[in-house]
Length: 219
Ligand SMILES: C[S@@+](CC[C@H](N)C(=O)[O-])C[C@H]1O[C@@H](n2cnc3c(N)ncnc32)[C@H](O)[C@@H]1O
Image (cartoon, rainbow, N blue to C red):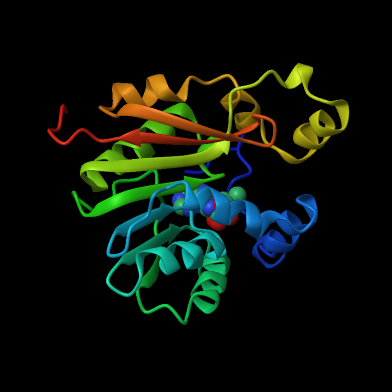
C-alpha cells in the first residue's frame, strides 16, 4: 500500500506534465543533467539495467543508447499513465521493455542485471518499504553488479536558501524531508551492499550513490 506521507506515486494527469515540470524547474537543463548522471554510471555495451520507478522513460532512452542493441533495459513503474508515455517515447529501442510492478514488493528477478537504477523515487517510501526495495535490488543484481541511487543528498533543510526551502516544503512530501536525515549507506550496508561511491550535484543537494553487490554474496 502507498504511504499517505508520500507523493511519489504521481496522480492522474501528473504523468502528462511530469517532464514539462522538470524542464521548467531546471530552466531547460534536465535532459543535459540526467545525461551527465548516466555518463557517470560507467554503462558498457551489452549490459542489462533494471530501472525502478522508470516514469516517462526519459532516462531509459538515454541508457538504451549506452547498452546498445546487445544490452537490455527493463523499466518498472506502478502508473499506467507513466508506462504508456514511456512505451511511446522509447518505441524505437527494441531493447527496452516496461512493466507494471510495485517495486517494494517481491520482484521476479534473481542475479539478472549488471546495474540497477532508481532516480527520485526512493525518498517517497517508508523505511520498511525502502528495505524491501534495496533487498529486491540486491537479489536482482548479478554478483559485482552496482545499484545507483539518484536522489536527495543528506542536508539540513533549515540552512537552505529560503526560496529553495519554500519550494521543497511546498512540493515535496513528509517522507522526502525525513530522507534528508537518513543514513542510506548504513541501510544499504545492512543489506549486504559495499564499496560506496558518491557524486554530488546542485551544490551537494543531489547525490548519485553507487553501492556494489559483492562478487561473493554475503547474505
Ligand atoms: C518522481 S517520479 C521519477 C521518475 C523517473 N525515475 C525519473 O527520474 O524521471 C516517481 C516514479 O515512481 C513511480 N512509483 C511510485 N511509487 C511506485 C511503486 N510503489 N512502484 C513502482 N513505481 C512507483 C511513479 O509512478 C513515478 O513514475
